[in-house]
Amino acid sequence: MDELLGDDGLPVSGVVSQLDWRDDETLSAQIHAMARRQRHQAAYLALRRVQAPLLGIAMPEDWGVDPAAVDSLLRSGEARLDGEINGELQQAITELCDAPLFESEIEPEFGESFQLEAINGWLMLGEALGEMSEIQTSRVIYLARELADYLDKYMENSLVVVEGEESRERYLAGADERFRSYGLGYFGTRNLDIESTCREAILTVPENEDLLTSVAGRQLPGLCDEYSNQLLSALRAFPTD
Image 1 (spheres, rainbow, N blue to C red):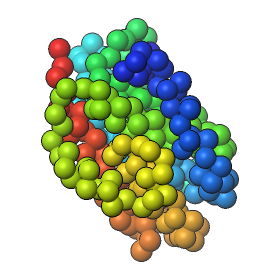
Image 2: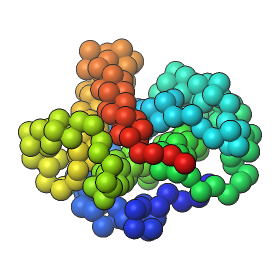
Image 3: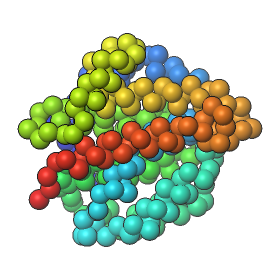
Image 4: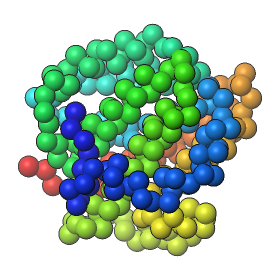
């Protein structure tokens, strides 16, 4: 799978590594404070924030990806959030990896690059189950941050007008200073905002409760989905060949 490139031709990982939010010790400490189950929950919600492109943008036919395989991946990934080995999720990942996509060199269009990175995030999560170390968890969470920042930069350097600019500007003007201080655009700032909300809920819910149905956590999927759909809407604004 080709590496995601920024609008200047550099790998996304190289572009974002200089940003303060990537090396922020406070954010790293919050991940450090989590137990395995909590790290899995944080990683899952990060992937949920980038899942809309998997559902709302048709993948190229030559990728050979069965939509049912994607649906199975997302359903099995939501079913258990305990950080332990998940046979159903592993099976869904195996079936997805049988697609020709994984044996070919791909030059993705802009929206397709988000699909590839979202899939890559699920592969990383699958490999992490049973361990869910701080590093493994951070990689998945950083993926959502990187994609958000990548989209902001792409929009900034593009002549394409993405609907909702005034709304995005209003959000940035009123956003908490702790998120605005990173100097990111709308999607980067909003992602950090939601990530923080998710993390606070995760650390609040007792281990014997289901996060997604708990009082503190039941709003999290909808919050992540709203953001993810905004991301999808922005991606759809850019023309495809």
